[in-house]
Amino acid sequence: MTDAALADDPVAALRTAADTLRGRRETVDEIGREELWTLSSAVSDVTGILDRFEERATDDLEGYVAFRETLSNRLEEVPADVRHSDAFIAANESLTTGITSSLSASDFEQARRELGPAREEAALLDELDEAKDDYRSARRRVQERADELDARIERLERVERLGEVDIDAPVDELRDPIERYDDAVAEAFDRFRAESPAREVLAWLAAAESYPLVETPSPPERLREYLETAAIGDEPIPTLVEYAGYSRSKLDHYVDDPKRFSAAVGTNKRFLETLDADPLTVSWPPEPASELRWRTKELVAVVSRFAGDETVARVREVHELTYEESYDRLRDAAVARAELTDDQRDRLRRGVVADELASAREERERVRDCLDAHSRLDD
Image 1 (cartoon, rainbow, N blue to C red):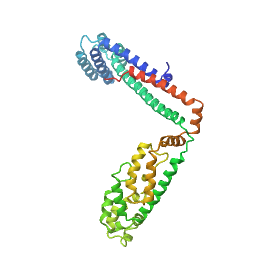
Image 2: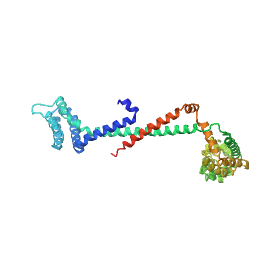
Image 3: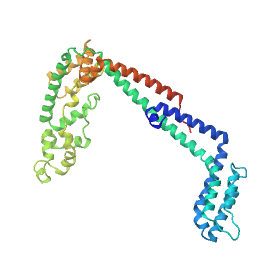
Image 4: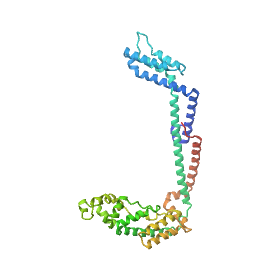
C-alpha cells in the first residue's frame, strides 16, 4: 500500500507499523540487545574518532600519533567477541602505516567501508526505536479517528432523533409563557438596577450566589465592601457608572474619597455596566423538564427579592409547565425546529442520514477492533 493510501486509512497504517515493529523486534531479539548495544557503542565511538582526527592525521605526524593512540585505546576496549570483530580489525589495518608512509583521505574512506556491515547492524537498535515511534504515531491517529467517529455518530444520531420529532407540534404553548416571563423579569431588573441603591443590588447578587442554577455574576468583593459603608452606595448603579467616568478633580464634588471610589468602583465599571437580566431569563428552546424545574424553583427565590408579584407569578407559570405531560414533546419540537437545517431535513427524508450513520458505525467497529488488537507500548 502506498504512503498516500496509508495516510487515508489509519487502520491499515497501524497494521503496517505493527508488522514493521514485530519484524524489527524479532531481528533484535535474535541477535541480542546487549550484543547490539556493545556493537553500536563501538561503531559510534570509532566512527567519531575517524571524523574527528581525519584532517589532523593526514596532515602531520603529531596528529597521526594522537589519532593512533586514541583509536588503539578505544579498540582495546572493544570485546574480542564483539559482532563483526573482523570489520574493526580490517578498519584498523587500513589506518596503520609504516614509518615512511602516511595516511590519506582514501585510507579513512576505506576504513569506513570496512565498518559498513557493523554499522548497518548497529543501526538495528535505532531502527527499532524508530519503529516504536511510528507505531505510537499510527495508533494515536487511529485513536483520533475513533474519537472523530464517536463525535460524528453522536451528531448523526441526534439528527436522526430530531427527525422523528413532531415538528408541527404547538410549541407556542411553551414559548408564550416563557417569553412573558422573560419580558417581565427583564423590565423588573432594569428598573431594579436603575432605581435601587447600588448597595442593595450588590447585596442581592451576593445572596443570589446561594442559588447556583441561576448563575448570576459574583459581585467583586472590594466593590461590595466599599458600597456597604460609603455614602455613595445609596446611589443607583447608573450614577456610579457615570461618576466612574469623571476625572479625579471632578469627582471631588460628588464623592467623599475620590481615590477610594476609583479603586473600588472605577476598576469595576465594566462589571456594573454589563449587569443585566440575562442570567434570570429562560433560554429558547428551554432546558429539559428536570433541569428547568429546579432552575425555575431557584429563580422564584432570586427574582422575588426585587420583582413584583406579577413577575414572580410568571416564573411560577413556567415552573408549572415542566410538570405538563406535553412538555417533553413540545420541547423536542422546539429543539428540532431550532437545530435542524433544511439540508438536514432533506437528507433525513432521502435516507442519507441513516446511510451515513450505518457507515460511520461500521467504520467505528473496524477502528475499535484495530485498537483492541494493537495495545499501547509499555516501553
